[in-house]
Image (cartoon, rainbow, N blue to C red; front, side, top):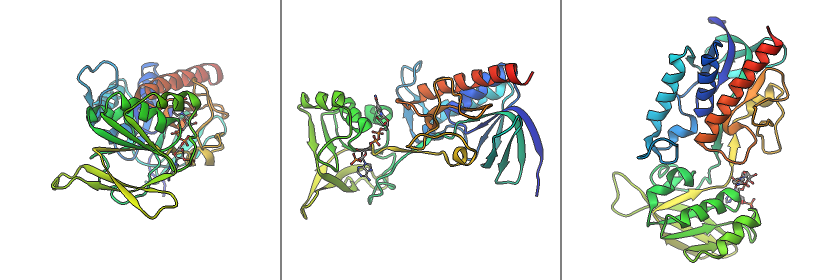
Length: 319
Ligand code: NAP
């Protein structure tokens, strides 16, 4: 069943900050453009209650408010938001096509992939229920809410150790729990840990569960975690206000892979800051791109760069 068919200069898949910045820059450059999203604007950003680290908002900003402001700003310049999930992409050739779950098909001369990434979960009891209530996947987003309090960080990579260093400046006490006897993180991070007396490192240890604080109901909030030393039957309860899970991210790159876009070993799309991928006319922006720092501020920069690359591609290849 075919639905309506529409053509755009640029089709942007994903309405997180990268996709919306790409839409803003593409539409302001006079390109017709559509942003496809299935869950409302914001992407991962919308999972955070408040953003304290987006420049320009001295008191922080509500993440939903920022997401909708970005969306309406792009729409003001003519970008079209299409609330439908893209289920397949045909990216080769001059004309690209997108098929949505509704059955609708769209054509575009360029595609910007901005599907983002999602934090990997631990899958422990209490994690899903307490997400956003002390369980967080982003210390730089949420750490400020735990000033003077206790936080537990899980993971052994650059993100986890970087998070522990960041939180050590904010929190009274930080526990860093890693499942092995050596960190995956670079020495520049682990060496910095040594000088901190408010960080306690628990190696060969796993967090088995996170519990709400007693008497918190009906608005439960993290109160403790259960940590077990590997090879030991005994478990230890650590009282904490927050659990930061930093065990890596998983890119949402299934559609990109199916479309023939080159990915790195972690599944992220390989491209420089210009967002240019291995397929002519296909660009990437935001957390889906292989890069060291995944933040809203780097995502919007990516979006602007990808839209500018699309504009240059259209001007030189399709005029
Ligand atoms: P990562 O390097 O993949 O590390 C994930 C960590 O989580 C590993 O230590 C891993 O343990 C642990 N882990 C995974 N699954 C787990 C589970 N189920 N239970 C407990 N622990 C688990 O992820 P990342 O730290 O987010 O970094 C991602 C990429 O971004 C890396 O390439 C990193 O170098 C880069 N990055 C760079 C910077 C920087 O240069 N400034 C900052 C942040 C991130 P194992 O070690 O045992 O596998």
